[in-house]
Length: 296
Image (cartoon, rainbow, N blue to C red; front, side, top):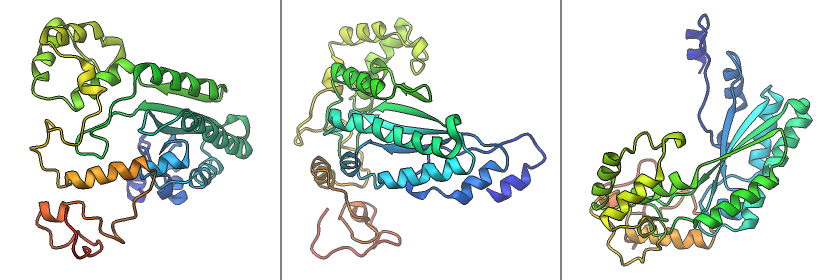
């Protein structure tokens, strides 16, 4: 950052950072950014409650986030953006409302530091289960329940200094379908294109009726791919791809997440995830030795 600042010092170029880990935020790094021009800072707590952050192994505490917010506001930032997910497995309405409580605390810290200039932007994206993860067997949240949780969050964040945005449920459903689809989806995607589907990542161009017609012609339903809980015994379309992580490890991680138990750092204790066997590693680089008698 110091070298970039020096290199572009005489040019109208400013530097910004993507979403930052709350527990690795550096005030010194923030100072380096503000030498050029203070852009917004973005952090990703992911969930509002500590229980749910433990479930997804997001080792960030409320005090971490509040301390980071205080550092940012006191260093001159007027706006912070926070990323959260809605629809995580085991999420309850209390977890959703905890997002509102956390955001108001961040805004309160901003107001204490710089007054009413402080603002917080909140982005709530819908959790989409993906292959090769502990939640690859889990269903996408039901559309009605998703709408109810977004409405509850919107009501909890009624403040003109808080801006809330969220992803459209229809585009999220299509993402969930394609993320865990099989080869039969190839004909659906082609047919949607033939019917005129274009630039679907942009809400103003997304035409769900075309996709519904394409699924109907193929004799398939989006819910089969997106909102069906898959048994552990099911052969998944991506099982032939070896990511290095064993299915046994992913299933154990899913059970741990459902119990909301965080996993310890593998630099202190090996959890036999399968990477060593898959890639014939004598040891994971700079990590703890493998425990004796473990299998992937």
